[in-house]
Length: 467
Image 1 (tube, rainbow, N blue to C red):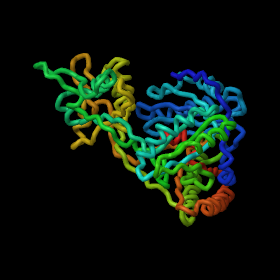
Image 2 (cartoon, rainbow, N blue to C red):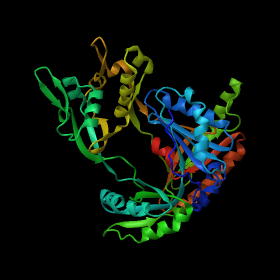
Image 3 (cartoon, helix red, strand yellow):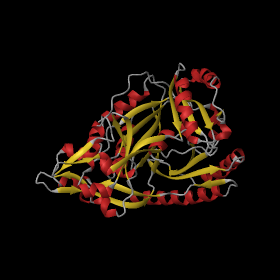
Image 4 (cartoon, one colour):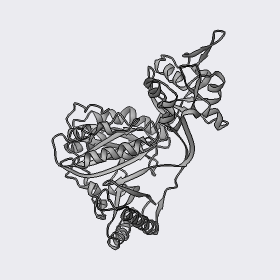
């Protein structure tokens, strides 16, 4: 289901003028247009294939919406999101929300609830550096963020890098030995007032199994990327008229010794993304035309990669390999479980893939599964008990595989190939100018192909869901 819209006023969105240099990469960056508000439609994905199917439904729902300017979407194992630009409106999120409601019945199972949020203006981008990155983050959270949020007109402060979080690391061997199920652990953790003492279940003979017997609670890095300069990134959003007051409030804060606070400008760009896709109608009846168009995209992407990586000081990122655990809904239903049990089990894929953020009496807790000595120990974990008393194991309803990090990008309902680029220090301006020239030449030489350049700050709402 759709989450209700927040009651706060939805404000217009504009991209900061410091992005003018990248806008000059006129190879096709329509969503850099500062005149149109942006709205983010986000959804989780708790079952296999739910994210791309859900994204496709949302795209189709919005394609006929009056006032739609541009669509940009992404999907991955964690979920999916669609970022749209719409015509000027007092309530752009409400327009998008209404368009999706009419197609809500077409959403696949495991792809809701959907949230619809207007994205405010980016006012400031700040880097906070210190020898101890976690100390820098502590200063940001305890001092800088409260000051900035207190500025009239600032609606949000988004911080990335150096964050520590509480984690509950489940031991698959201990879960197997005690026959404790994942839902039992999650239920116990949710209700606990003291995680060290909470009881998960009792075995025959009145033997109590405590949470600490099958897991450990610890503080650990959240895995957020810091900037190349080693800084914690702070993005301030809100009304454009709040830019001056926010800047003055920032400069009035005295950082602790050894901590540097710097407001970033256009030269501070570290990463850009190049997207290659086809142009034209979102769907074509002629299958051979689709095949030919996709082949043209692959050829253009090869040219783009060669041209971009030929610029001195420009590099790409290696794709990481991860263990992906996805639930099979057909196998779930075949177990004869109740809808409530199926909904509870759906969290399992999140726990095993990226960690489940669990609200508890002691605060937010990320639940993850520690590395098992054998894959069988993980896959034999019990997730439910059928009405006939038989145990439902993870291998009964899920599949695990070692895969390259999966992320599917789309531009205007077309699949897009994505190339992320980073710049060496001191070469950004020259490299961006040369990149513009090379990519413009490719776009000119290949009619029907769209080559788009994005900054991380512009697609941060998408990248936050699917890195």
